[in-house]
Length: 370
Ligand SMILES: Nc1ncnc2c1ncn2[C@@H]1O[C@H](COP(=O)(O)OP(=O)(O)O)[C@@H](O)[C@H]1O
Ligand SMILES: [Mg+2]
Image (cartoon, rainbow, N blue to C red):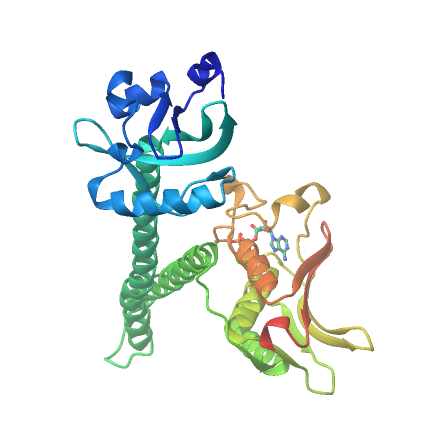
């Protein structure tokens, strides 16, 4: 039998029960846990400490255990409860050990009060539910915002366009000038909102990509077309170089176009004279099925010490005070994230004062498409 001092020094409530289920030994912690004095417990059936509706079952369990007594936690996976002298119930965890003693076979139960742990578990569950609700609210907010912010802006940009086309009637020079400012500010705001919402979506893992066969030449053609006027405004030689055979990749059309627009837009923004060229090449060998789209410019270039800042969110190399071009420094950050989602890679080479080349390498066939 466990010596009394040891029995007393254990942190858990300990109760030893004989063959007939009668309590033969308890420690101080057991008295405290159940609210009885030692004398009230000794000689009583252990079922005294089991809630009434579980007593019959407890007697059966005890009989089963007596047939094959081994040290084990009791009722694994069950929520066990004990009942105190005052009738209140207490959640407990119980482990049983059989021992042979001079008094015969005893079963010793170590009983741990898990009220506190249950409390933690409940708080945790509540917190989890709260977090889920917050995350759902954020998703809803994003979806609503992307609609709510874009719709009025599209109206502003659209009607500015019809005014500039003089559809409703003639314009004075001053009106035209001011409408152009509204138009370019509107476009700028729209691209900013799009970038921020895209970034939020990527961060939340909510961006939806549709992998399908995409004709790279067609997308490059669209990017070239949409930025042509920007190149013309700056008198830049803006060209496209395509291989003879078509280049088809399995990818997400919108993400791919967005990366190329960002890269080309940067190339045009940061180049004052010379050229910008978008070039497509593909490398189809036994172990490589890769397509490379590069955007090369003859612009200001990037200093070696600035290389690591380039892809960080909201990083712009030129200090605000000397900036001549607009932007918020999200383009490359987003493009790199999108490139990774497309299983691709975005790299660059650059020489200050000579120019930069940004290259997007894409697998011809993405893992995600199969
Ligand atoms: N083609 C380029 N030539 C020189 N600098 C570049 C080029 N592309 C990007 N950069 C630098 O990298 C910074 C980050 O680019 P980006 O994330 O697209 O932001 P943004 O275009 O809004 O400034 C730019 O502010 C610029 O300093
Ligand atoms: Mg940019």
